[in-house]
Amino acid sequence: MPEIPLVPAYWRFPAHPASVRRARHAVAESLPDALRPQLGHDLGLLTSELLTNAIRHGACGEDGDLVELVLWPADGHYWLAVSDPGTGKPELAHPGVDSENGRGLILVEGLAAAWTVRSRSARGTSVIAGLSFRQGG
Image (cartoon, rainbow, N blue to C red; front, side, top):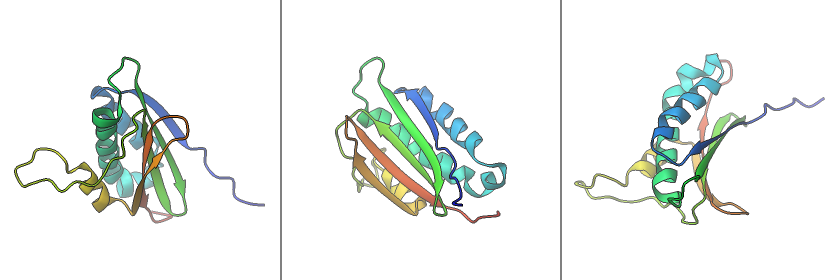
């Protein structure tokens, strides 16, 4: 009999900066206790960067805009998908040394084992990033 996979964790948050802290907390609490020391910090950083980008660049600025997060384990990784209603495609930037912005996806690139941007079939964009983990600690 095949192993039944875990049900992905799913959240929707208002597209507002206050949601970033709530999302970090929700993601951290959803991790198994044994994996929190291994994944908690990096997954928190990914959550913050991806959600901040979704709120700043992907939300349409309308009341009621929501961003969605999905977290699931598969194939030795924890995958995080952050989706927004925007149609733009996030791209890796190369900011100048004096620039105050534009380094979020550089951080994602450095932390994630793999990441990608996908258009959603109905409306919006998802950025998906995976962190590898070791089974059993």
